[in-house]
Structures are given as structure tokens and as C-alpha cells.
Length: 83
Image (cartoon, rainbow, N blue to C red):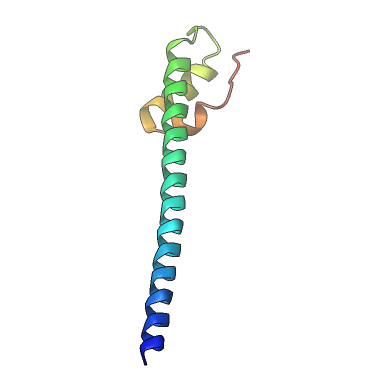
């Protein structure tokens, strides 16, 4: 009976450590994605501020929408050229 309890406790410890490892990995991934999104948004705002605001307004409109709506987290990584 004693060895059964020891084995059970060892399995519980092992499962707990596996869950903690997975939780740590998922937390790290979510922090990394959040940082990438914040960096993309900052890039979008920077590109919007540095636009020339002369026709055509394609880049200005897209960077402006990205800055206001939060889509800048994605739009900030694109180089949009006015032609």
C-alpha cells in the first residue's frame, strides 16, 4: 500500500511540473506576441507622423486608420508607398 501511495504522489508531481512548463511556455509566447503587436503599433504611428501628406493619400489613410483602430499592430509592419 505504501508503494502505491508513493507512485501516486510521484505521478501527481510529474503532471504538475508538466503543466507548469506548458503554462510557462504559453505565457512566454503571449508576452512575445503582445510585444510584437505594441512594436507594430508604434511603427504605424511613427510612419503616420512622418508621412508627407501630399496626394495620393493612400499611406496616410492606412496608417491613420491603423493608428486610431489598433490595426496598426499589423499595418505597422507594411511599407506602403504613395505613387
